[in-house]
Length: 337
Image (cartoon, rainbow, N blue to C red; front, top):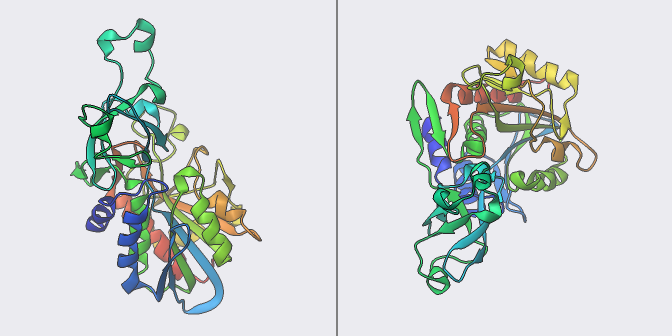
C-alpha cells in the first residue's frame, strides 16, 4: 500500500488539470478491471463484474488535488495566481512547481520589514501574493509559463515516526490507492470504480459519473479532517490518526441514512475492521453530488483521517489507510449492502 500511495502522489493533478494523474490511474486500473473508460470530463471509470448483477454499485475517489492557477504575468515577470482549494494563509513562502515542465517558483509578498503593524497582524490575502520564478521581466517569464498553468506544492513524500506519511496530494490519492487495492478482488455486485475529477471545485466529476452509471448504492472514499493534534474537546477533534477508517454520519453536503450507516458499521465489526465516527459535520465530499443526481442514490462515505488537509504537508498514518481498504473490501464482498 505504501508504494502504491507514493506512486499515485507523484503526478500532477490540480483540479481541472488532472490528465497526468488520470493517465497513470487508467494504466494501473486496466489489468484489474473488465473495462476502463475516460469520459468527457476526464473521470476514469473502471467496471468490474460482480458475482451478482442484482445491483450496480459506484465507488468514488476523487483524484484531483488542491493547488494554484496562474491568471496574470506582471511586467516585472512575477506571476499572479488564484487558489484552487487552498487557503492563502498556508501559501506565503511556499515553493511551487508550475505547469507540465514543473518550473520552480516561490510564493511571496511584501517583506515583513516593510509592512505596517496592521499588515503584520494578519496573513496576506491571495491578491497580495505573487509567484517568483526568477524571471527578469514578463517576456522572459512567458518563455517558461503561461496564464492558465496550474501549480502544485513542491513538497517531498516522506515517511516519518511510526507509520506516518507526509505528502502534498494525499487528499485524495490515498482514496485512489484504496480503490485500486480493493479492485484486486471480485466484488459481490457489479461495480463501477470512479476516479473522479473536479471534486475540489464542487464535485462536478462525480455528478456526471453518477448520472451516467445510475447506481443503486454509492460509496465515497476520501480523506477527512483530523484535529487530534490540537487541545480541543474530544468531539471537536473530528477524527484521530491511528484509530482506523472514518465512517460519516453527515457532513456539509450530505445526510447519510441511519440504516445505511448502521449496515456499514455492522459489516465493519464483523470483519474486524478498526473504525471511528467523524464527530464534526463540517466539510464536504462528493457524496452530495452523487446523492442528488438523477433519480437519487443511497450513499455512504468512508475515509482515512488526515492532518493538515489542503496544505503542502498532508499527514496520515498508513495503518488507517489499510483499515479503510479493509472496510471497503468488506463492504464490496457483502450481500447486505
